[in-house]
Length: 485
Ligand code: SF4
Ligand SMILES: [Zn+2]
Image (cartoon, rainbow, N blue to C red; front, side, top):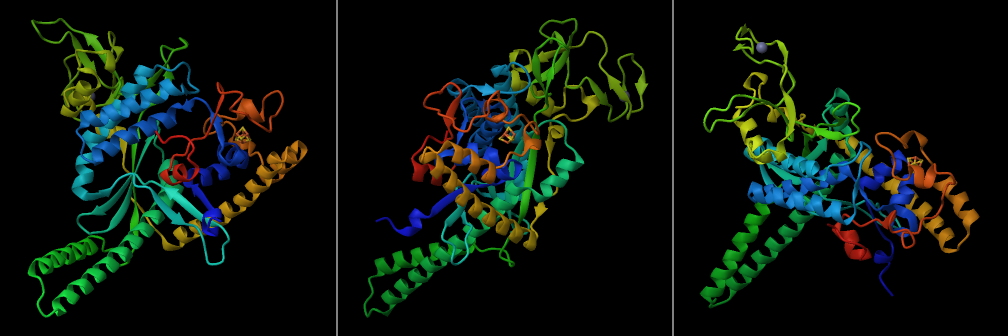
């Protein structure tokens, strides 16, 4: 018989915790149904771009060259598009445009974020799987919160630990988003997991160092110690003590906070208006140009990155007059938008971003790339807030474990009226979440179709559904379901 610890093990993560708060019914379908969760066959555009960009940034942080990081990210995106398809609310999707967007965001991170980040912080680790216990003495469930922080950081000037968290978002950075970052679930969950892991590693490193010290002293006590063995043990001891020092925490033994970095990817807009074509409106992939008379091998185009802008300094305007700076302008006649990834003259996304970085495109409008990034002040942990978050997550996930087991038992028993009754009692529909912040994937198919559905069979309808695949290694190992890539 397997040990009870394994029988009672239950894994959760921040996404499921937040999904339940948004809508308990969605949590049921996405994570609990038949112990696996069921999701639409195709994947969401924003999610897939975010995952692909994270692949690329992970490569950058382990010091891969930028071109290789771009390859990892774009190939990930293309694999997802080919294997599953990608859906979005904003019209038909141009996959090449989105591949260019992924490339642009990875190159943006390499050019604008990485140098400052590595100046300020030592990158200790990236995308490491962590598991934080959500239990107190006497709990029957061995509940663990899985997480994979984007980066574990140590500030060079203070030695303080931080979590690094990167997000891709649209273009509308607002005070509300800034405020939300202050109590973001992901930040708190990852901070706690990283801190717990540091403490565990420090404890285990200490006990290794202690053992090495005892071994060394045992040999010293011998009447005629072998000098080669003595030297080897001494080296081991020095190594383990060095490792201990490297893991030393700050005087307060805590991770100080979370440094978020947002990469702006622009909006999806219908362009030209009423054309039915939707495009990604970001200067990383879409610029402006107008023809100029080419002289010899000179460029045939003049380029700009923004249609409207406020000039940052004195300059001579298009009519040859002096402008004092701080004035609103817009591009005049003859300018047209162009797709950066299709332009050999600018050198595709790579060449275009290099031009933007060098400031040779529309210098009057000021720097382009730094405006595609938002780096809010770090969220600094508040001990009570963090403890409250942990307690709430533990209570919620224990209750869901019970509800899920009751409902899955009713499904197993084939008791359909019981299934409906339990669904209504245990996993309510939060109707205010159906269409915001985006349309829920279960909207037409399960909740608000002609006839509400209470069961889904991916085996019989593989065009529409698939079983959810684990995104965290521990769950993948335990269930053996699906893949991680
Ligand atoms: S459609 Fe609405 S009620 Fe149904 S699962 Fe989605 S958010 Fe919940
Ligand atoms: Zn001006």
